[in-house]
Image 1 (cartoon, rainbow, N blue to C red):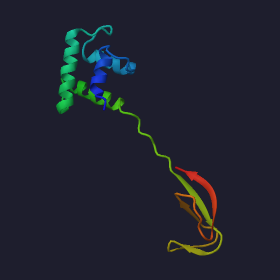
Image 2: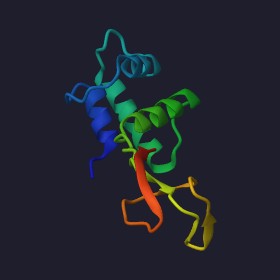
Image 3: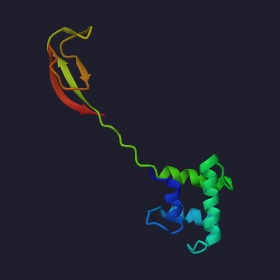
Image 4: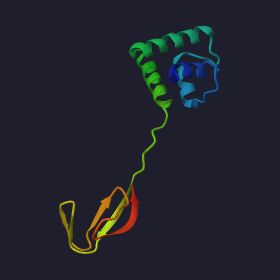
Length: 128
């Protein structure tokens, strides 16, 4: 697993090509008093020390820096893939029961899979 904070540190201090938003870079430079994007060795060391402390116990040099680290970590998480689930609509063609429930002709049910359902006709595929 990639150490997100090391990757972020490398990006902010110019040691990698990780794309960070301009907004996050501007915020980091403001919080660590960086001028014109030029991090001094002292600023890099301070950033690294505060980052290590944040990793260990969740604290930082200020509430603003703590919020910055939290936002930065969140921004580096991979996007959550939404699982698309399809449903299938079945229309009752005659009065009947299905799984213990009584259906009148014309009523519909939604099922998560395509299958043969006695007394029901498959309609349209839907989705979430």
